Image (cartoon, rainbow, N blue to C red; front, side, top):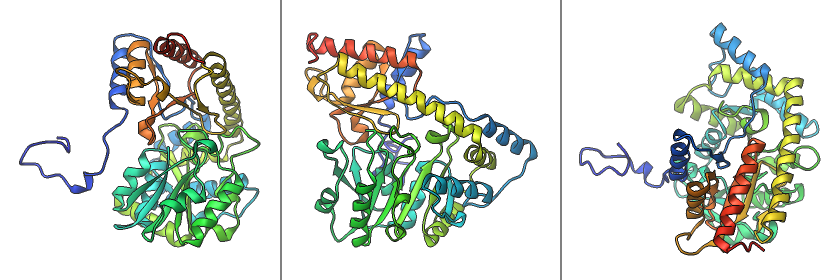
Length: 409
């Protein structure tokens, strides 16, 4: 039975009233239909990267399954929390990180919800930069707070400034949710930009929940700039979330860590104790192995080199074959965000209808920008096989030329 059911015998909670349905639903069904029919599909719409888990993680998880025991702490076992603390410390130049302030969650989505539920309540306003990860809005509403969308500046790679935030904040504003590198744009906030945003928030006594899931996927020198590169005084009211699926080849394992001030980490542990309990310990042991293994780090470095090649190939293709299409040049993550509202006409009136026609006519699946808060744009995931990327780009270019009579300048 669905929330839209008309059955008089079913009364569903009003907690569901503001939860959006799956925005990818029709596209996913078309991709599945084509696959069942044996048709080729270049699926560049997915969230997850195409990467194998580290061998050490698989071995650690299997050993734990055979042994049949592990941590039952809702905040995570000490082995993984300590490994995460060491990892976060190394990424930020040896900054001290206390394992007692680390919380293990069932993926970045769960970590963010636990933080929101611990920090926000009914009547609070929470600032959400757009375009951004669609899960944030629903998670804020589940915490009984109200999301406030802040449109990013096109001249600034669709990132937000302190001035943008100030224009939409009020006396009820309680927090800001920030991502860097950004899903879906691939934009990266510089250390100076982060410092300005954190100073702005601290001056107003706001909480910042900073999602740094893609921090290691950075095309500059070293990891992307982080909240953990800032002075201690700016982190008094900050929670930093790191999902391990994108950074350590653990796609589908649903495991993340959050670093928070001690009173917040304890609160998050209590929420998880009541809402879920402990993350399965085989996944915890596998994640600890990934964070501690030199071999896993070597494999990750090789994967990042491949991602850089994919990114460069996509950017070069657009500049050569689709020179009139505006895009955000990605500096991190593995997403390419480009604009399609110049192709709106006839039956194509939104990014969603653009993507629906593309998958139906050319077997290329992309994620429409309405999912992320802006129907003018489309997201392409290049953490895929080179064959799928090439097929997808060729299908996209053919489709665009059919819409423009061959003129893509």
